[in-house]
Length: 42
Image (cartoon, rainbow, N blue to C red; front, side):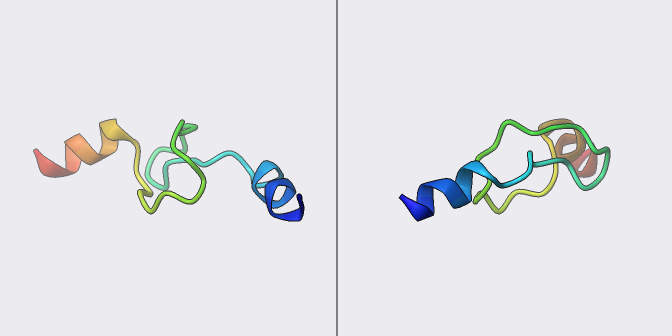
């Protein structure tokens, strides 16, 4: 149960470029939202 509490208490994940809240899982390695990622590729 302690592990589950750890993940519930993590802060919401935000894009490191624009600060927008991301709906990704907290343990995901992606640091940018889809919009910022698309702008970087363009």
